[in-house]
Amino acid sequence: MIRKTLAAALSVGALLAASPAFAADEANVVPGLTAVGKPLGLHGVDPVAFVELGNRIEGTAAYTAVHEDVAYYFDSRANMEKFKRNAAAYVPANGGFCTFGVSVGKKFDGDPRFADVYKGRLYVFLNEEIFRMYQKDKDGVIAKADANWKKIKSTAAGEL
Image 1: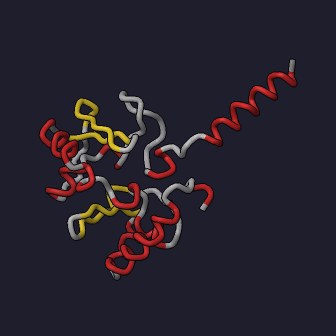
Image 2: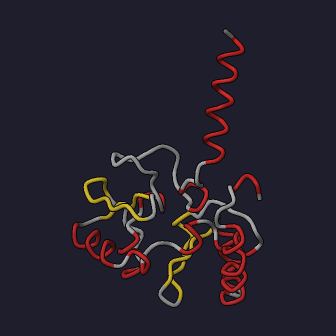
């Protein structure tokens, strides 16, 4: 009986390992799932309000849109609709991981409290110290992050 259970568990593990990467490997999300069955991105902050107004306004589950298997919350129906029309203009760079971390080949949490909308793109950072390091060379950090993101996008954070 134990052998059959072990064999079944190993078979399930092999199937899961062979399945495509989950969004959590390519997007920084909070633990757990939203009511729409997808993980929450940008810590629940409305990305449209962030990009357009520079405000960290908390979204609500009443206004949820899913992009690339990640749920985003919005403060209003209007913001949700804007996002649906052009999500690429609002999703955080580097899957929402810390841009400075990505510039050095890591996937650290991107905290919306430490963020910058630069040249129309939203970048998030691990903490204030890292954010200040980014501010010293925004273009350099972003260029390195862009190059590294192509290499690490589908790699689990724990494997970097």
